[in-house]
Length: 379
View 1 (cartoon, one colour):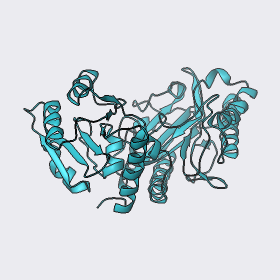
View 2 (spheres, rainbow, N blue to C red):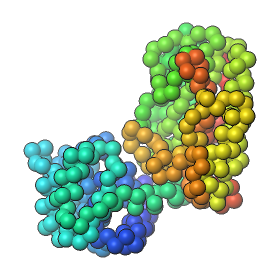
View 3 (cartoon, one colour):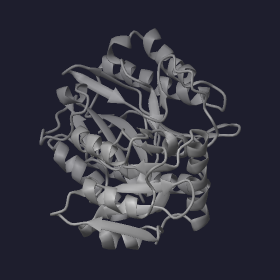
View 4 (cartoon, rainbow, N blue to C red):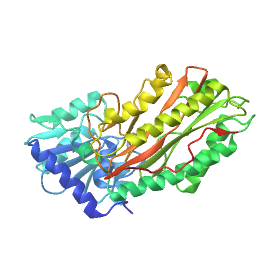
């Protein structure tokens, strides 16, 4: 069963077509898996295979996918036309032939060029196959995705509840002698056992000196007294995520960790307090960053404050390419945007702490969708 009504899918397609018309496009060729799912409902673990969604300015949409994907495409998508290529076919040649037979070529074509899984060589061949009047088509679907519908927010809320269950299970597992893997396994079991769909990545669990290294995760290290433990999870409901970051200390925290923990909490709360429609992305970033800089931790926070979240496949649950909360960004916030805001401070190869929330921009300000006590936990 698809997660949204046909009316909602129709509204999304209509909004994309309005953007196409404004740019004078007759056809949009969608290659980004998240965009295909957003417009059609097509949901698969085979998203890294070659796929295209043809969106003409009028008429039926057309999915072109690997033959192995036919049944899942017909089962999950509302699109009436699904064409396939075999593993011995050249998918670009098949796409050219099918689009030509449907008389979809010959006009101005927009081709997405920001996908993770379409290599430059294949993209170049596809562009050449689409004719002489081809231009970049990225951004048209993303412009619609940036504002979440009530149904999308409902899925993110549901994902948040599952993430919270994972966080609670992880924190209850932390103790001297336990391993990062055991903590991660407890989180994963609670999220997936509770109803999460497949994730974009494994739970992030780093401890001791490893907590001071960004984008590490569990590695069988045994927890020791005095360790900082940084946790970041994101459960999923129908490809929508509710990320959450929390931190713990095993035993009595050192004074530096206490002060660092107070700073990340204050920075997170300052960012949340700044969020409302019309405020710029850069202003929210500065609210968070200002707290960190005033505390003297600027060298350990050289990143953005947050990023949009919504429909996602691995390797990333974020939509930072759509909207990010970053220094000097003039983008105004709008009601319906959803952000993950994860201020984290990492002293390289010594220790690190972080704290995050998933936040919805509302007409009157914002709503924190994740529900978990903001404290540095003691184990």
